[in-house]
Length: 576
Image 1 (cartoon, rainbow, N blue to C red):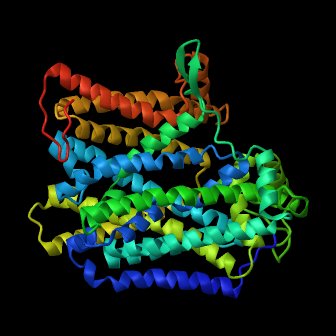
Image 2 (image 1 turned 90 degrees about the vertical axis):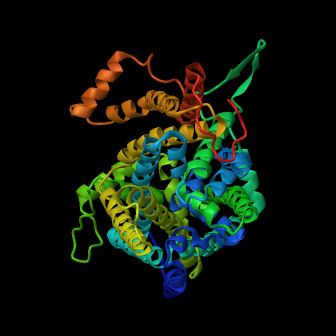
Image 3 (image 1 turned 180 degrees about the vertical axis):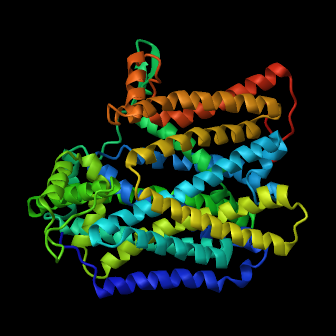
């Protein structure tokens, strides 16, 4: 592929990294206390925290995946974005006052007050483990297309990114993270808008041709509604990704984000007042809707662009790139015949061509946008877009680092190891935790270089299982004064079992995808012989919906049947 990365592009990328690093050192003095490092002195304006929430939300995975989804299919995933205003209103109405009134910087200290120490440990342990995986996945999926397209060493890209983020998070604390996020949000939005303009003007016939061709191909469809009335009975199609299923999925996932995720809750706490905190949440939540629409439109425009006669050679190049990436994930690296390393061996070429021939549009979708950035953008803009991809990754990773360090200090060091810790000791704990989680997150990214996509899928399935449990537990504490610790425990156990059952079809599919003679393949075949009647008929998007509601309803039922009286949660005026 004829990709380019000129001196001007390097200059733009270097300027971005220099600006990001300088922010950390600029705020060094303001972050030398636990209050400054974890809560920014509770003095930041709402618009800055709002941009930080938005930047945290839009990781490099989204930056590349959203165009890929609309390129391969339609705008059905955009329904997820449409759920955000609803979740934002709920968060502003109930979640935000709950945390602001507590005075705690840890989201999970409130769970201990409500249900006991087990609830705090359950939530915080899972959150900390999830952040290691999240940082690793974000950095890996950011570095992989750059390694494949530009020929950069993927390990060096990961190491450079991990070290850079850890340094400015260590030096500047959350105030540097939030301000860096704000700048990164502007960079990634500018990159997306400019790229869309180049795309629309680059298609022969201009924007009108893009919209007319895409509309004729059904690219703007939001999917079937998925519910209705048939012969007087209400029905819901919960077995496919219909409009309603995606909307419910988005609502519950965003309730998890805004209600239990330490990353977001620290932004509420860092705002200077309740009014500024509300402003930050509305800005961060609502801004994602039009920006995600821009990314979906980029994917739609890429579909028209790459399927036009003038670019008919581009899609085979993308297939070759994805095939090469998959071989790298399997541990198969290019082998060359000549000393100049330009002619691959016949065996490698055969493997590459065979892998490329079997790829679908869905499987290559995530790599079309990086290919366009590398090959078709003019010098300078390529550097800006690559900086935007770095920005999307670094904003997510820096947030995970600071929130994880905060939890390790508050929920473990000061809660269990050293309750009488001095300010200096707490700062040392924060510094050590930032470095430790930076190393673990970067290490996870390096480990993922050797793993396959299916392993990542299994991890995210497990994340959904425990994440749904956390959200249901939190909602139980919010809506009911009657629920106590035994009721909450019964709800969590039931909900996690329901989520496991609903997630099991994905595990069976993974086992069946393994070689027939392997142990995993044999287990999958055994499950298949048992029949599929006992497997969940629900679409995977319904897992957090049904699981969370199971925890909430079982907890309420057990509390009512036992006649228990729990403590009244902060900001709650309801009675279940």
